[in-house]
Amino acid sequence: MSEITLEPTPRRGPAAPTAREAAHERRWWILAVLAISQLMVILDGTIVNIALPTAQHALHFSNSDRQWIVTAYSLAFGSLLLLGGRISDYIGRKNALIIGLIGFAGASALGAASMNFTMLVLARTVQGVFGALLAPAVLALLSTTFTNPNERGKAFAIYGAVAGAGGALGLLLGGVLTSYASWRWTLLVNLFFAAVGVVGAVLLLHHDRGVDHDPLDWPGVLTATGGLFALVFGFNHAETTSWMNHYTLGSFVVAAVLLGAFASIQRRTRFPLLPLRVILDRNRGGALAAMIIASSGMFGVFFFLTYYLQTTLGFSAVMTGFAFMPMVAGTVVTAQLSNIVLLPKVGPRPLIPLGMLVAAGAMWWLTHLTLTSTYSHGVLLPLIMMGLGIGLVFAPGFSVATLGVAEHDAGVASALVNTSQQIGGSVGTALLNTLAASAATAFLVGRAPTTLNQALAAVHSYTSVFGDVALIFVGGAILTAAVLRSGPIRAGAPLALH
Image 1 (cartoon, rainbow, N blue to C red):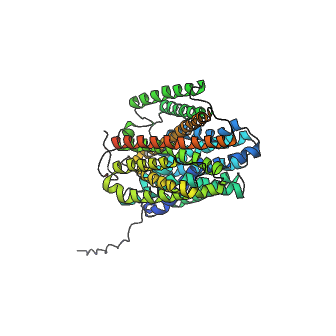
Image 2 (tube, one colour; image 1 turned 180 degrees about the vertical axis):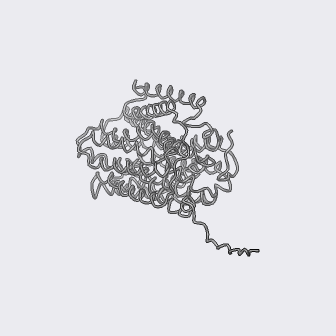
Image 3 (cartoon, rainbow, N blue to C red; image 1 turned 90 degrees about the vertical axis):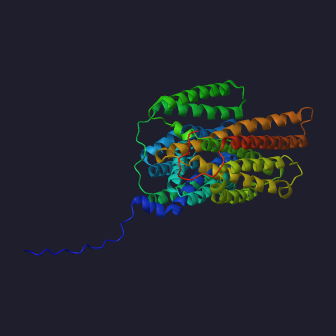
């Protein structure tokens, strides 16, 4: 009988981590890359605005053409966000992020090299196209990378602080670059952000092949893109003409028809561009409403307070940027506090409406500005208060708007958040500019158009807008308090569709 010898089973070391596990271990570095990428997009909303007068003088285009430097970007960005989110789900968020960063950087370089108005508008349009691919990928990656409730709160607190403070940082950076370098550097600086983002994405993110390979909903794509384009165009056109202009009214009619058709298509199609399961939740709906309202109100702070600081108080572009830094500090503080400490315990219902009310109080405070006010006694404390309020809105809003979304819907849900911000900004631009112009005109009725009266009319228009924004925030507090559900929420848990 032969003897059988059993070889001892060799001991195996720990299994090598998968690409996803390795990426998760580097999640805080990934957060840094995503924050830098998002900051580039947020900065672009204000950094170029600071440089516009200098660019206009260098390229010799008219005041009526100047608006298209901003409008070309917002039209492309706002109308293509839903498609960009769907594409990121299809090709993979890492691929979408890298392509978006490279494309955005290339368009920025083209803009910086512009020799005429047409070249600059083309570059801004291309920036918007790649921004619409980049922004949803960033938020989707953040949402799927951080699923642990405690870590998710910290991650979204940082992201919310970047989103809330990015506009003010853009004013500072734009002022510094325009004053001490060239207006072209307000575009060239994007190459630095993009380079860091691309290198970080290549080294840190795991390769994903996409999570949603359903056929593309082309009727939904065409109606959503066309409807959003018409809506953003209508608001931008109202800003430079009037609400009753036939192009403005026609744009809103086209937007209503196309977006109505889009909603109908999404209910009937098998593979919708925007699945109804993504939006039929009270918490998500309340968070999206908060994004629209807060974004429209933020325009009132940045745009009109910038004018007050520069034209009334005589601040330079650089000084204006530094003047907004206390607001940034306030935003960072409450973004961390709300998402890390408060949101897991009390949920979004107390936080977002409270943030709206705090912001409303800050705007009401700013209605008391006069020609003789100073920064330290009239602007500083309301700015800090505004930052505290915005941090309570943006950080929980981003987290709740993407909470409980299935991984294959993360891209389109993230696109919806960015779309809400873009629409809010467009509404704020058109509505508040119109209100400011009306207030200035009404003030001058029966008064001689002296230099003093012109200056008084300008300040009156600013303070009137601040009062209007305060009312907008109060309305937002009431709306979000009614829509958001009470009680804490659990990250990772699916949200009820009611």
